[in-house]
Structure formats: structure tokens, C-alpha cells
Image (cartoon, rainbow, N blue to C red):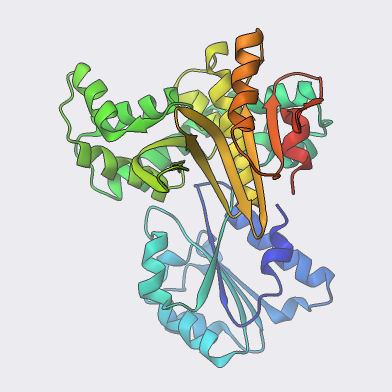
Length: 386
């Protein structure tokens, strides 16, 4: 995703970078500053405050921020949550109309819905995601084809883990630290969850069932079978905490006939498939359909405004995606072995009586077209969609 073009010239509005821990927010701030310099902005016009750096430790509050600014016009602040009353300084700078402002923070201290309180509509948000397949190949010097996609399904997509690809032991330790930070700092500590074992069971259950329709009732029933008594409301709360930490994404179902959106029977995909695989001790071939769905959803949600599951009677379309006046229908499968499987995948799409593009995305080299439906290898599909 080209974050530079989306963010860099949106002047006089605060740009807020959000996303899963270690997804690259700090790195992107540095890239944005380098891009400005390449475009002719002088280095003395840029102020960068990173509270994790010891030489900025004296910055305690909003007044310290304002005292640093002399003639700078581009303000970058990383880990802003550690500065007391930071929002007062940011609102003041934005009100003058003279500054471009970029900020990021830790999910363990602030949450996206608190923005409305702190910044009162003067901002736009940009969710920073782990590497896409193209970004992964670019960072590991691999071609876009089946072998690289095979490793992409297994390996972790977070930038620093990918860049440590030649050091698997360090990769593993780094990933464990990230999972612990997300689970304990961003979720358990942040929301004061007492029953940590129950929460861990829920997260693992969600990882196992990434391609299943889940409901609070079905999850509660499973947890009871594991001797953990929990209400449906608690399940819904815990899943919402995972979403707010950007570890999972909820995909709603839409019933074409009744025009109804089902709020409590949805799918949950992981923002980073490596974290998902680590939670369930990767990797069984029986998981591959769900993993392919997860990857396709992540790519579509990057580029399209909305991506949902559609129901047509007793049939299901994996994804219907919309953007402006465009619509696309997608079925995802590992293989189409046997006439029955092939008929099911095609028939579901043929039930849609319009002329919008329809795709079957699968884990094979072959491309074909039948009755207006295009069958495309997954590694080709996720690099061609716009």
C-alpha cells in the first residue's frame, strides 16, 4: 500500500497512524520524513519527537512540545501517549493552519475511539498493516510466484521479523515477545481481564476457526466443554478487545434476500497470519482453505472500501467487495477436486445475476474462464487487484 501518496500532502489535518504492535508505524514516520526531504523540504523544517529515544526524555508535557517548535512546519511525534496533555499542543498547532502533523501511539495506552475526545474531528486515521505479499517479496528479494507465496503463508508479515529472515531463532523469540506484548499489554492489562486463561483459550479457538462462521453462543459452548464458564456478552467483549488491538478483523455477513446484516455470527481473520500460525502451532494442510481466505481478505480490505460475506439462500459467497461504483465477487478454495466441488464454487457465483466481475481464487497454476467466471491463482490475484 502506498501510504506516502495517501498521507503526505493532506495538509492542515492531523494524520494519525494506527495498527497492530510492530506493524511499522515508527518506520513509516521515518519514511514519510525522508520522502519530504526528497521532495525538497529542508531538514530544519521537520521536527521529529520519539519518546522511546533517551535524548527526548525531557519532553514531559504539551508545553515542552510547543517550546521545541521554532520554524519547523512538519511535526512528527511517535509514541505520543507518553506526553502529558499532548492533545492540547496538537490542537493548538492544527488550529493555526501552518503545520503538517503526523502522530502515532501504543495500543496499550490509547485506543482509536479515544481520538474523538482528544482531537474532536480534526484528524484522519491510517491503519498501518503488516507486509502485503508484494511487500514481503520485495523485502526478501523473491519473485511473485508459488514458492514465495508458500513461504508467505507460513512466515510472519511484520517488518522486523521479515527482515530477520536469515536468523530464524531470533525471529522466533521476537515473535513471541510481540505476541506477549499484544496479548498482555495491549489487551489483558489494558482492559483489566482477570480470567487470562479463558481469554487465551478464546484467542486460540478463533485462530483455529479462521474460515468458520463464529457466534458468541458457539464459542461459549466450546469453552464450557473446556470447563470454562463464560457468557455470550463476555465473548463479544473479548473479541472487541482483540479488534481494538488490531490482532483480528471482523467480517460481517450480509443476507441478500432479507437485506440483513448479522452482527453476532461473523468470521474473524488475523491481521498477521504468522501470529495466527504461532497460536495454533502451524501448520496443517487442513488449515489451508482458511489461511487462503485470510490472505485474500487482508489484501481486499487494504484496497477496497468494504468487504463482506454474502448469503444467498443456503449458499455463501466468500467475499463481495465494493469500492466507489465497483463491485467484485470472490470465492476462495484450495483445490477444486471432483465435479461436486467445482459445481459448488461455480454455482454460488452464478447465483449472482449481475455483470460485476466474479472470481474463483485457488492454489493452482492454471487460469481459466467459464460462464464469465475467472479462475485465478491466488498469488496472481492478490497482486493484480486494484
